[in-house]
Length: 167
Image (cartoon, rainbow, N blue to C red; front, side, top):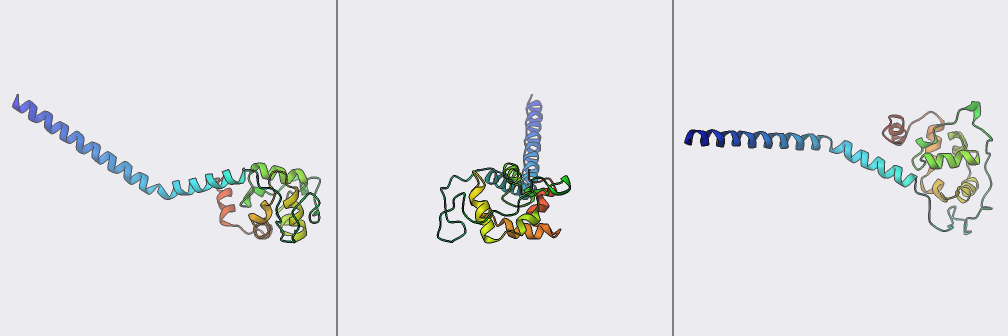
């Protein structure tokens, strides 16, 4: 029975070695996926931030010394519907998620070139009139991003949106 005990000990040792190898393999797989997981967490944080309405009170987003209100700035050119019945994917602008895209569409903003053309006064009006999202245009630099996207360019964020890694 000493042989049986030795055989059992050998089997236990082999099982322990197999378990350690499996754990090491799992750790290696986890380490290999770390960059992807970090990116996914970053994207998830971006999505959460984009979908969180602004809770800040009125502020002076355009730096003119006047707190923003619904009469702030100048109303930009808005559309009743998207040109040719097809809106741009405004979610390609970092800072615009599905809810904010719907809010933009509700006020008549459907295209990158609309946003790209906004003056400081028009940015102030949009900042003041996006209910629940005041100040987002300036804070997230929509105009700069829209200028790139309106000319057919891409941003790192728009590439992630297009590849399905965000939303």
